[in-house]
Length: 160
Image (tube, rainbow, N blue to C red; front, side):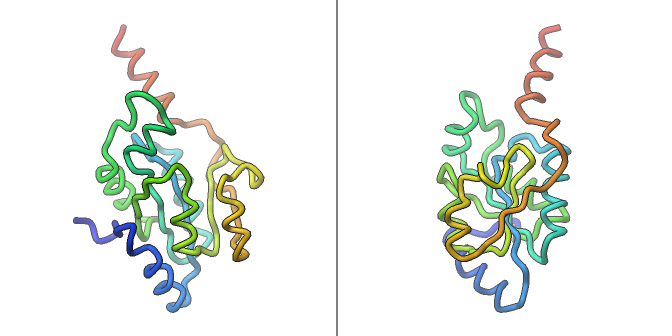
């Protein structure tokens, strides 16, 4: 078991402990199915904004609903382990909802980072962040990498 992967039920306690230690908590989330350079750049940019980067990983059911048939390619546990192996990541929490609102409410990070495919206005969790004065930051490089594109390229190469 990776010590960076925290059970969902412990998210509130983790947030309290990090705030007591004076740490600036950054939160990022996603499916992270088939980890690629865009994910790494997004998480590294997020980490530079604070002391502790907590990454929420969509559980298998929510990833399937968000990404469609045949997804996720990897289980939530495998995706969490891969993301936890990145140096920029402090903790990982798997959550089962379609949005990270509940996890954000429990963790109460200072900053919620989203990738460049979002604007501050399009972040689904912006209302919950506003409720305690949390900040939304768009981070990472331009959205020119995607798991869906990689899957399509692999499928095309296989059909040749």
